[in-house]
Length: 466
Image (cartoon, rainbow, N blue to C red; front, side, top):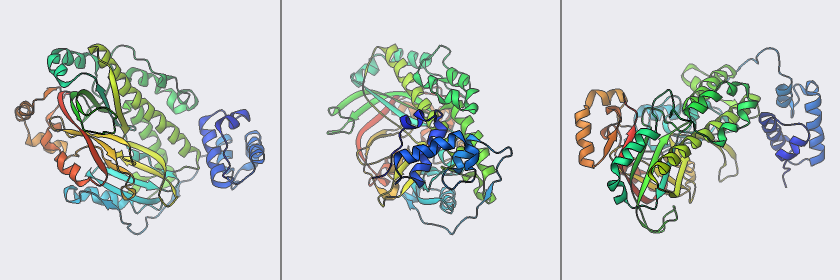
């Protein structure tokens, strides 16, 4: 049986910082997992008391450096790319060449273990949107993305869709009052959530200056394709949500960790490029070894940003439900810009990065939207190892935002919305439905990855405006 050192054990010997505890746990897992517990705790006690004695130590060197940092910054290590490695591609005929090329480059990293492209994939910054990458004992900030913890959240209400039609005016007013979109600002009235009291804001110096922004932006959304929308949900028999089959009123939101996540991404990506030197074409894939202090600190910050994104959705849904006098009876939510510690079927432990991809482990619930005027789907994961237990996070863009602006007018978009029976508050032609891939083709391309358990149709949509 492998040795397990718990947080309580570490706290009792003086490890009160989350990064220090994570480094200690990682070292034990890698080098002392078959050791005697008290002997290992004695070593850890010695490290925290006399860190200089363990400089360069095979087991405790990284922990020593954390407690007793060098006066000068460590010199970055240079890496070469390896020969191209294969990866699974789903819905390949709908995926542009540039997205494939980005994934091919990611698979040449010396830490890469396995990769997959989802059918909504398109070119991104670093890892393509819709790209899934498993790596060995490392985390890549730009494979997580700038909007850390960007996610979907669905609330199902006991009311049927007729309620939404009857109270359409009140619903629009609530969306105006209790949502905020754009890069800056927030709701304008205080929001409370336990995430604001997280220890990371006090323990990690970089995060202290971001606490005020996190407070201001809690419960708000960003720009681009982020949205908050009410619609009609049809759940099928024996659905993953656990509700009787039938029609429901539902609320769906899409946004991430706001300025907090963006600042974390920029800060750590800069450090990663200094520590991990790659050829120019691959520099955005710079990673942190999980055994380093920087790797553990990024992981702590990433995890906090994910929790903050979740809190934003919780506040949005709670505010709107209270304003409309309705109560959620079920929820489905998940990140799609994040990294997870997972185990492959062959027993290897890896870090799985999903950038614009939905976790789809066997039996796992998910929500995959289309566009502002097309259906989205409640799904249940099939846990396919070749796809790294993933699915698409939406329909995926068929054209760039600039191309959409050149091809569509507001009048054209409004006509499409009217035909679909959708009311749009805000929004731009960049997010017009025809700028996205056909969601039903995307779903057909991933029928081996997920089963469809319900269909959501937007009716009143709130987005950012120009």
